[in-house]
Length: 461
Image (cartoon, rainbow, N blue to C red; front, side, top):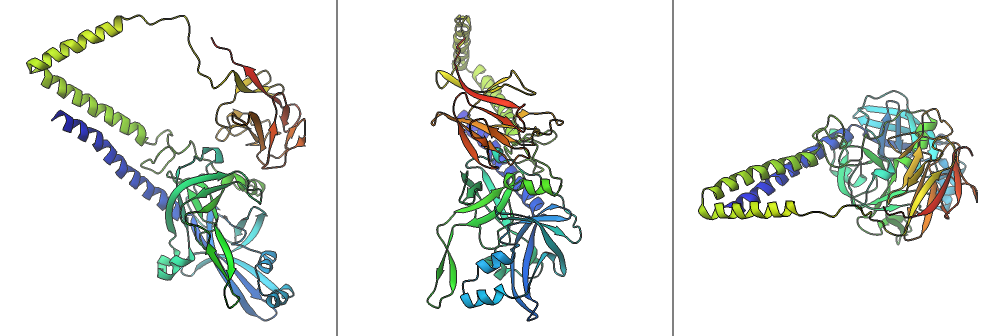
């Protein structure tokens, strides 16, 4: 009987957690449905007074007057000409008077013209709408809060799904689910990407990738495809593999929002679960299911132990077992534990540190752990936080980390406004990283904010 009680007491909270998680995902998805919209690029030949083509994709509402999508969704003349395979058509359109128009679709008869106001070679375009739309905006997730194997969701308007959609269903986005399979630190275009096994198909591009708390990690950018020509000479795209797609993290295009002065918010904390309100966990005022589950398990175990104690106390064998348990516990407590020296576990004889040799934190030494250390003015994204009046330091200026296997420090500039400089090699290009040796120095913004990386001997006390 006791064994059966233990089994059900442990399984019951887990079943509740599954139900809780499903409810949280539904709330997060519903929140994202409000900001994942359709977008169309239409090309018109003004000389011939005819439509050339119209192609659709997905977009994310980032402000009442702005949306973001991929540059290959809201494409321009140069991109269009590069994609034409037929030489005759390429010559024809190269000299044609083409007009490119962009429209977001909110529903039947509800279309809003837009214009591209910012482009990035990383395949990002931000468009300004001709009239505002009211949406509950969602927060964004810094790259360093995204974990390998973390559950993610992808939303958008894949073209293949449109065959079964009609009426209002045409404007409801599709949702797929997967995990973060890999972080690509730098691809051929100099971008960071998150690889995922969530289904990303033609039409999904530009839609949001979000976590279980309903916070945007980035925008869908592409899947593994190759282009072939069939026997009639027409180009066709085929998948190179299953479950291989990529999303562009928010940190890779936040520069556009900053330049356009578009306000945005970051998630309050890393997403460690799903709340009943779809919010980040843990945060004040939002339930933490992990804590709740542990509390419930603890309460049930306490009840079970009390019931077990009563049952044992009512039997002769049980009273003997309880006396023996009390005797053993007294012996254990009465043993003396040696004192006078505490041990500190370390991975080796030296500890990697960042020494602040100039500026606001001068004289401070910070031990570098397994995770990267971000330097900047935004406490939500950085660990070494500067005051807001230190404007030479960007909100997220640079990141320093130590790799034990390489025995080296890696310094990366996070597209800072005033640059990150290594004394040995000069300014670090935005979004790129360099290797620093022990004893080398760098500064952020200006030479007054100087740092030095070192391996200090381990002191054991």
